Image 1 (cartoon, rainbow, N blue to C red):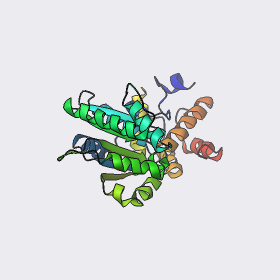
Image 2: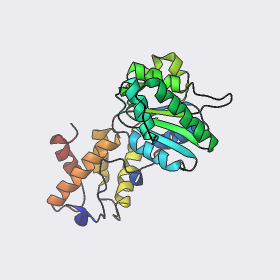
Image 3: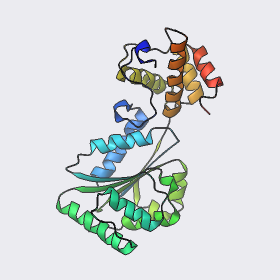
Image 4: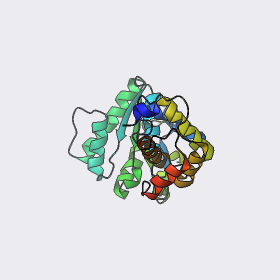
Length: 266
């Protein structure tokens, strides 16, 4: 509705994990570096935790883009609330297996064959699990066992767990698994400086020349979102809509306050 009014070629604050709009804050850059390191150096297990809306899913998609398909076979599980056999079947499906066995033993055998096949083809096997805090204890045990697939000098699979902060406690409660996760990182929300840069960055990516948000409004946005990207997107999107409806030339702090008072961040 407001695209032409504000000079955008596309909506700047959509809450979808679009890598095109990925903003590389210091925290996000370090998280991406660690995930890529885990995959490229065959570190076995890695874990990325972060609050809801901090950009874990988008970061995952950027990470996948950075790993060339001719060198990496990547499976992504986005709904891990599954029992062990169902989980192993889903993993095989994500690795585009021609058939999915009915039993756990056959699933594990097929997964190992897939890893060996990739090894012979000089490809790394990488499994990413989003919303990993939803994994059951028995399925976490299956993940531990998958990390037992090793040669004398290397892991046959890299498993990257991504989830909300409670994932950290889940992993700590299983020392045998936690010890296999060599790379751990917690993704923090933006500070004020990155919040300001993020808002400007997304506008520029969407085609606008200049900032539609005053400095005072950016301060209000940070105050009310505490730098959580998803909350920033919601607040900015609705503020642009309200500004358009009022024929404003810039988004001031009063618009931010109005949107917040209407419950936009609930």
